[in-house]
Image 1 (cartoon, rainbow, N blue to C red):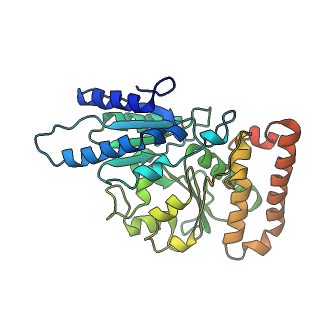
Image 2: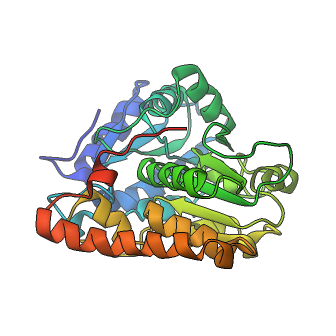
Image 3: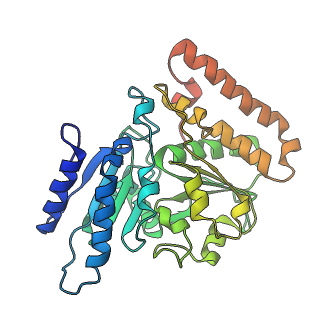
Length: 335
């Protein structure tokens, strides 16, 4: 495992590339914001792998694996200088046959993703996962199945009680966005139980691409089955939101897609305040649902107002107490 804390990231990657060429396996762990230091080295390795794959005399080598941690949403002491999720944007512009990007939402999916990337050959794998304690949403067997799919419906989190299309899709990619989506789904379950909500989690971000654009991409029929052809989709994403729009730009239901993500609003603050500052929090997601489901704006006007009021209360609370609201800090999932 190569790290960067007391060494140049360029040096660490150079060591790792040489190590891989000897037939061994490795992992490059780095702060998400600072992995940009090796942007050009990643680019060159991707290009080299793309060409090497076409040479029959080149034997496959273990993949170059990046683990991006201490990520944008949890910089409680470092602040704005350590908040940049853009490495994924950089590598996803490169060769689709080489690049893979994973957002495991919990520890069990991280174990499954890590097992997969360390066994793989001739790829550049990027895994984005925080190192703060978090919920385990899936058991190990369910996590294996979910990672194999790359994206799937979490039926236990939604409220689709009968077969048919949901009223709205809440989608997520990343550990913190998954937490906020599930908290939003819980609020909708409690306050709007008649609303049919589908929760979709995405581990393998390339699944959002069309099948003709990426080996892991979905055909339109599969994409529409997951996200529906015409229902509003509120997508909470770990990184810059326009990446999701770019990945889905060729889809027929793209106009119904609304993405929340990081928009360069950062500082040293509480964990929940970071998501509030970037409009990725559970209360904002509930408001997005109310605003986008036809007919819900009038029927749920009082709930919308309550969600907005909680955000104002949060603003005052953290300045008075230096910690998140108790209903946020002590939240747990319940059906």
